[in-house]
Amino acid sequence: MTSPLKIKIKSKFKTLVILSSIMALTSIATAQETYVPSKENVEAREWFQDAKFGIFIHWGVYSQLAGGGNPGGEEWIMETEQIPIDKYERLGTTFNPVKFDADEWVLGFKSSGAKYITITSKHHDGFAMYDSAVSDYDIAEENSFGRDIMKELKAACDKHGIKLFFYYSQLDWHHPDYYPRGGSGQGYTGRPMSGDWDKYIDYQNAQLKELLTNYGDIGGFWFDGWWDHRNDDYKERWRLEETYKLIHDLQPHALVINNHHVTPYPGEDVQPFEQDLPGENHSGFNTMEVTDEMPIEMAQTMNGSWGFSLTDDAFKSTKELIQTLVGAAGRNSNYLMNTGPMSDGRIQPENVQTYKEMGEWFKVYGESIYGTRGGPIGPRPWGVTTRKDNALYVHVLDWKDSILTVPLEGVEVASATLVRNGKSISYEITNGGLALNIPMEELNEFDAVIKIMIK
Image 1 (cartoon, one colour):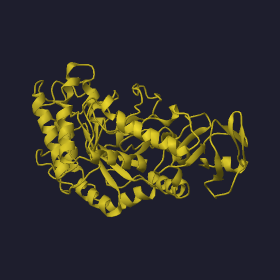
Image 2 (tube, helix red, strand yellow; image 1 turned 30 degrees about the vertical axis):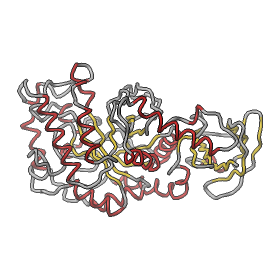
Image 3 (cartoon, rainbow, N blue to C red; image 1 turned 120 degrees about the vertical axis):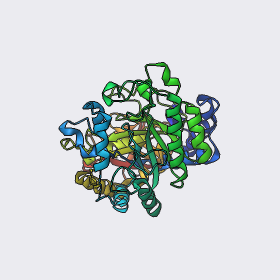
Image 4 (cartoon, rainbow, N blue to C red; image 1 turned 90 degrees about the vertical axis):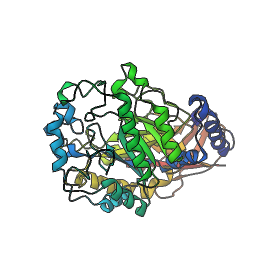
């Protein structure tokens, strides 16, 4: 969506909202070349942006090793410890998540305020966490557990009103035809140094078709692993157009999200950012420009690990997570917060407590996040703004004084109230904008939110 930050506010705040929406829809085809999203896809994009908050789940046979005592190795442990395929395959036979309860998971995620879930259907190790007919290397074939986790989770999502997205790794350290090897999965795996790349893409698309046809309507796919060939000619041989067409033909509303860290390709519907707010690059790989022509999303871990770690106790506080979520919303972005379930199927208790605390916050402040878009004032050291219809929400995340001047020009203010309790606050139109008189005690909140109604 075209950012309203570039448009000077007119006397009617609604004019800004309508204008930015029209610009977004008419500019999609420009950057996306010949790809024009269907009506169903455009509606799904709108739903996605309204939802604002999702839960990411990294769970697989690697969860049994819990990072091997080294934070950072969790879902990458096959690569970081260079475990050969014939040894790593044993994890598939011993994975037995008997305490997995799909309803308990979904209700826990829903209690946090999340509207959708994205879960690893297959990670880089190649193990499918669903019943795949085109591969025996899956949870239904390799062990006595024998249940289709994705089917159970989809049923729970449908029951409780949560949308389900599938993460799918394009990179595969297990499949013999993933050749040539890219930047990972080299000689240690025990695979022959040969293979048929196109045969592998056929296999990938066959698995995607299974996920598209056996699990009802899904939210879409979150791809990862394209970057494994970013430094060679195979970066253009993923047959993305074919894959994306398969998805959009079978489920036109399904959103395609590819975590490749480059400018979006035709056929993609959401631009993702990993561990960074859009426009920031503390991680080192979010170097692409932020698009203004499609929804955006940032994914972040609750500690430092994507998969379950036995030793990573550096959990972010609820305050930090909420402020990141708010910072994302102010940048017109969704927030995808990750958890790494334990190998027995339980969610880490530290995460469960955080979900409850975030849910309590959403009960009070949800109106300033759900259904909003990034506000007319870009991110500031003190915070961000969001907007919905004629309401402007000023999110004060870090401010020490009672007077905050918000640089709004040419607006008529009908009222200014605290979202927390509906109390009016005084304000004054100055040469610098709108000066808000915020009670000092409100600045102790994670996010002091002022709702400004524009005439």
